[in-house]
Each structure stands twice: as structure tokens, then as C-alpha cells.
Length: 402
Image (tube, rainbow, N blue to C red; front, side, top):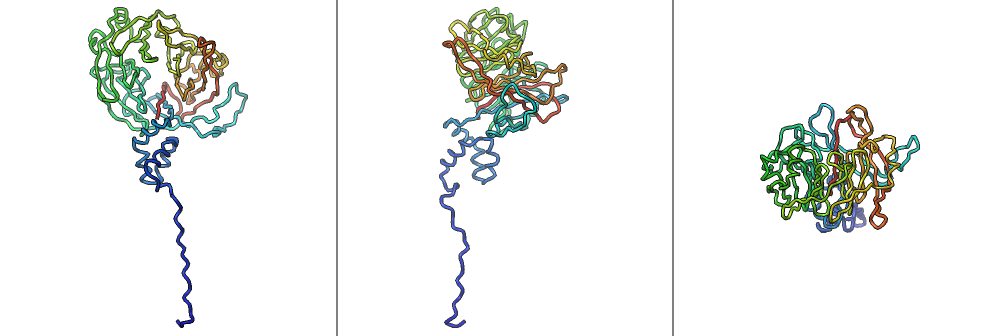
């Protein structure tokens, strides 16, 4: 090479670094950003990097979601399939806006859900029974299945489903084996009543599970002769919580239980349509509690000093005439608080016990009128869910805040 020959200039083909890439942000900021994203996107985001997978799998991000008010209401449904002793579990995921584009073949009486739900199968519990709402309760992001069903032997077992990771684990056992017990949640404590012989187990007829300490405490049964006689003759009664009180419907009587001092009080005699064998679903929405009667009416009540007065939710006559006849015939199996709206779910009318793979639902917004003396419901949408099964025999559902 002569002095006049010049070596060709080498072109630098290296791509310049992108300014301030996302992974370079502090962990606290990344966590705060991801906490605001819908949790249904977490499985896809976990594939981005090991760091994302670790963060999105941790409980810290769910604490952050709770602190910034980013929790989502998640609906879980379980079905009893013919020939299967265990329940098949599904989660209902809200679709992105305007993604529910199925064509309507006939004129509908109500608007369809503009977003709708996707039905997603999830891992089932390795138990040998179908859980009923009587003894299934949600505390925060966890679902507790306590004791055994009515048709099986009494059980002291506790199964816990973590809605964050969709995993199961065993919880501390109760001191008494129970079946078909009634459970309510108050102040992060689960109160379990009955499900056992009240004379043989009077001292621990009530057990309370502290979610924070993961421990049980036993309390005696009611020192009320009328209540004890009712429990000796019948297992059927309803228990619910409203504004810090535990209410118990037994026959035509309504009692309250004060957890602080363990005292029972007769509130009032209630009308026959709200007797304990005619109320099938409960839900607290804001400052009112709603229930569904055997005849399919949706009722509401507010807390009062001397008991609760039950009135019909007005404005729902059109919904009662829905072609599926589920609401009119009392086939509503769930009332849920879904983001401050009443989510009503029912199955279509069937002469046989076997039902199709479809479940109907309606979203209803509630409005107080006449200085709180009336509650009106506005049906925002009515739609149908299709499950990946041929048919089912039983079903239940609940919501969790995740």
C-alpha cells in the first residue's frame, strides 16, 4: 500500500442506545406503573423479562394495587358437571371496550354488554365435593371453602384459593367438623355458625377465623330458647352481614349477633316472603343490602335501629319478562357487587335438572329516590355467557377484589 492509498473508512453499524429505556427506571416506579395495568395482562407481561415475571408474581404489586385503588373486581364461577364430583372453576375476564361484537339475530329488549366477559377455565380444587355459597367466602383476594356440603360427612377442613396466583392451599382446620354451615365475613374475620349438633357442641357452635393470624377461636351458641329450638328442628337459616352487624333469619324471626360481646337480640318478626326458606341470594351494594326471593323478586333494605324493612327494587318489571324466564321463576343464583353495580346472574328455565352451557346476566345500576324510601334499578345491559361444557347440574359464583 503506497502512501497515497487511503484505507477505506469503516462505517460504524452499531445502533445507538434508546434513551431512557423502561427497564432502567427505578423498581418503585416500574411497580407503580404495572400496578395500574389490568391483572389479566400480567401473564403476557411476565414474558417480557425475568424481572417482570418476578415482580408480577410477587404479593408486593398487589399491595401497591390496593394502596393506589387499582384493585379489580374479579368474578369466579364454578359448575357441577354431570358425573363429576369436583367443581369446574372459571374466571370471567372483562373484554376490552367494544370487543363484544357478536351480531344480534333478533331485536333484543335490552342492550348487550358493550364489553362482555371472556370465560377462562382455571385450576380446580383437589377436593371431592362441590362447594356451596353457604360455606364459601371471600376475604380480599382469597376464597375460603370451609367444612363440607350437606350431602357429605362433616368436615373440619379449610381450602383456600389465592385469586392472585390461582393456586390452592390448606388452611388451619376448625375445632369442630361441620357440614352445610353458614359463614359470613366481618372485619377480616370469618364467622362460621352451625353445621353441627347445637347440644353436643354448644360451647363452640360458633367459630371465628382470624385471617390475619390464621387462627380459630370458639364461641358458644345463642342463649335464646327460640333460636336453639329452631336449630334443633331445622338446619335451614340465613346469615348475612350489614353495616357491622350479623343478621340471622330463622323462621319468621330476625336476630342480630353482636360480635364484640357475643349477645343475641331479637330485632323483629319479619313477613313470610322473607322467611329463611325463601331467600336465595344476598349482596351489599353501597348503603343497601339486596336479596332475591323464591318468586324472583329483587328486594332491598337499609339498616335501621329496630330492624330492617324490605321493599321491592322498582323498575325491573321488564327484566322479569325476559324470554329465558329465569328471573321471573326465581332461577337467579347470584347477586354480586360488580364495581358498584348489581350483577344478577341466572340460568334459563329447564324442565329437567340438566341445564345447558349458557348463563345469563344483567348489570343494574341502583338509584335512591324519595329521600331514601325507594330504590330504583336501571338495567344497563343483558347478555349471555357460554361455558366450554356440554351441560351442568349446579353452579355458584362470587367476586374477589384483586
